[in-house]
Image (tube, rainbow, N blue to C red; front, top):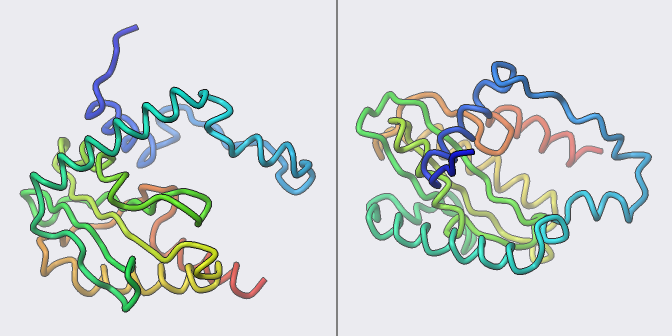
Amino acid sequence: MTALDRRTLMAVTVAGIATPTTLGAKECAMDWITMSLEARNLAYNNVEHVGPENARKKTEEWAAASQTLREKRPKHLGLAYGDGERNKWDLYPANDPKAPCFVHIHGGYWQRGSKEIFACLSEGPLARGWSAALCGYTLAPEATLTQITNELKSAFDWLDAKASEHGIQGPRHPGAGHRHRLVRRRASDLIHS
């Protein structure tokens, strides 16, 4: 098997997110409600699956690649959408303002991580002529899940209103599994459940 470089891997990942059925993706059949707490925790424990040394090495590689990208493209970083310290967007516009935009909301169980660490995930979309947008938010336990989802709703409102001022006019596409309107709906569901 040929090794893929990070840029190619990210482009393939974006293609898989944008068109999962063309790649034969199947929906996950796990029943999260009936799983034990131990089984759910194991399912989400990436370190357990790849090993602590591999996880540390990968995190360091991503952080270094992300820092390099941010240094090369500093013009649209840290754009505030709210009053919180982490309420900021990092935008990476494509040459064509009407190009699609890959949107990524970083993971970390709502408790850790940052858009800065995951900036390297923009390399694949950028290499294919897409724009990219990475959003920050206040982490738990400083913020409740309700507060975080409200911040994300505000973030997407800002992106809808202001992205064109930063060279991004094209449609937003999911980078973390949700289109922004779907994120809003699910955020609302979480708040009211």
